[in-house]
Length: 161
Image (tube, rainbow, N blue to C red):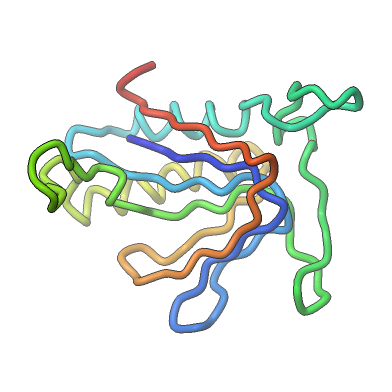
């Protein structure tokens, strides 16, 4: 599984102009499931991502993880509070291979049934840790809005652990 993880001040995902997931701060995680991925890959990412020490401590050094409570809660655009946590968005395009030509090949991406199962397993594993995990809608055309904090963006691949 591949992930692009961004430290964010806020993030939301909408489908048909309706917000389906939103966090006030924390991590935006785009997840791509490859055809040879297993639950072990999803579990590894679900352990790795919340443990990333990419939030500032009192001295301004990136030394805290979301597990340390580093991401606070803030009021959303409409004034209500969105939780701090992780916003997980399935994104098969992370498996695109553009080495040849100009049109990416999606041959390494998992079939939708497998990808959905592993995406949902990842979300379940995050929630089992007591963390908020908001989601997009699998296989939907989504609009993701966020404010990258830093910017901080980390690339992870479960096959390169």
